Amino acid sequence: MTIASAMFRERGYDRTSLDDIATGLSITKPSLYYHFASKEEILLECISRGYILFQQKIADRDDVRLSGRERVRIFVEAYVDLLQDTVLSMIVADERVMSEAGKAKSRNYKRMLNRDLLERIEVGRKDGSLAFDDARIVAFGIFGMINWMTHWQSAALQIAPETVSEQFVSLILDGIGTSARRT
Amino acid sequence: MTIASAMFRERGYDRTSLDDIATGLSITKPSLYYHFASKEEILLECISRGYILFQQKIADRDDVRLSGRERVRIFVEAYVDLLQDTVLSMIVADERVMSEAGKAKSRNYKRMLNRDLLERIEVGRKDGSLAFDDARIVAFGIFGMINWMTHWQSAALQIAPETVSEQFVSLILDGIGTSARRT
DNA sequence: TTTATTACCGACCGGACGGTAACAAAATGA
DNA sequence: TCATTTTGTTACCGTCCGGTCGGTAATAAA
Image 1 (cartoon, chains in turn purple, yellow, brown, orange):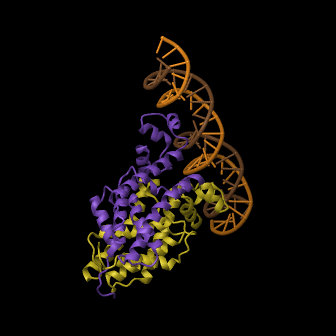
Image 2 (cartoon, chains in turn green, cyan, yellow, orange):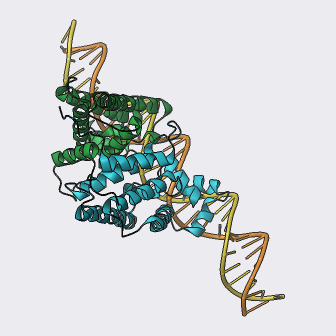
């Protein structure tokens, strides 16, 4: 399972064959079919595991008494954390490879994540700790920044994991513009 | 060519067969091979076209006398524009489907885009219109936000194209945090 | 009229891949 | 100890796909 996740993330779903996964597990393909009904089921299982782990990660750090601003920070930190784990990052899997049923399940997870972030953002609007125009676009921007990390050729740039979430948070909350001239 | 781009973006490279493309062009696969040496060459051609068009787009709007802040805005607007065009957005193509040679070419385009954005950001640091920690992470964040647009199920959310770039720019430059309490 | 060139097609090859049928060896438990 | 379930295996099928081969109309150049 964790091996499948890693392979899907590294080579991509289409380019990871069931034989690849089986070999990685030191078994054979038909044996894989004893445990899973189809390739898609394996993918869906990977996605589900990632989502469950994310829920745990965030439950540990969360605190509803905090401001929206801080609760967004917590979300971003947990999500960056998740996506940095090769094994758990399949929530970003491309839906186009899935059947309609699989697509529906996958979208469900995404929708829950999206709703969580949107709520935090809206809390921030209400308590005055955040200001923005359209919360949906802000959420898309945040997810995009983080999801795209899966496309970095990570080895190349030596950046500490915490640095990334720290700087993403600062980009999201404070932006990079100074209050100086707007020429 | 433009049809190939659209299909690659909609279905993904692996799931677009040469027969699909040929049929879309009302010709046959062998005829495709008269014009291109391989499937990868078609992809590379799509990427190249997108890149060239981006260069034009940005050249029209650019002005080196502007502040770094404004030049970043110009880049973001042009890039959002490009990615919103189904036909020209192949610069975001997943490198993993490519041969080493193709990967090298594709990375070259990406590197040039990245360098352009990095320069604009650094100009902003020097002229005081921008402030940040690591320019590379900022650039990755910006590209991520925008590149991920290709994963939106665009029809669903009715948002005007200009609104997106406008709000992305505001997110990047000003962030969503208020200067208020940081509880 | 002969010779090239351009642009295309039908038919096919070899390999990979998801999935299956039939069978064997462990592990389990009475 | 022996039957049953669990977990594997070998061998194979159908399909799809990138790519190739041999050939052909149509048009232009010599």
